Image 1 (cartoon, rainbow, N blue to C red):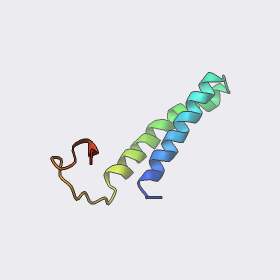
Image 2 (cartoon, one colour):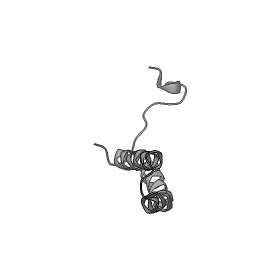
Image 3 (cartoon, rainbow, N blue to C red):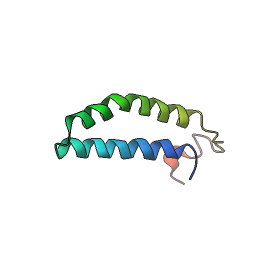
Image 4 (cartoon, helix red, strand yellow):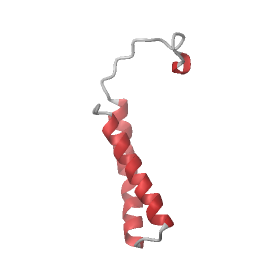
Length: 68
């Protein structure tokens, strides 16, 4: 797995757990903890994705919407 994809998968999993916890009425303290910790997770994910060492070899005109 690529290093920049791990934060995306982790934050997505936390989001799914959060939404599921709300729907099944789990402990309010768990829901509030995840809610309060989620901005830090999102910032970490954005930082890791934006600073990923990915070399783009095509231009926008060559692969518009990655249709090739």
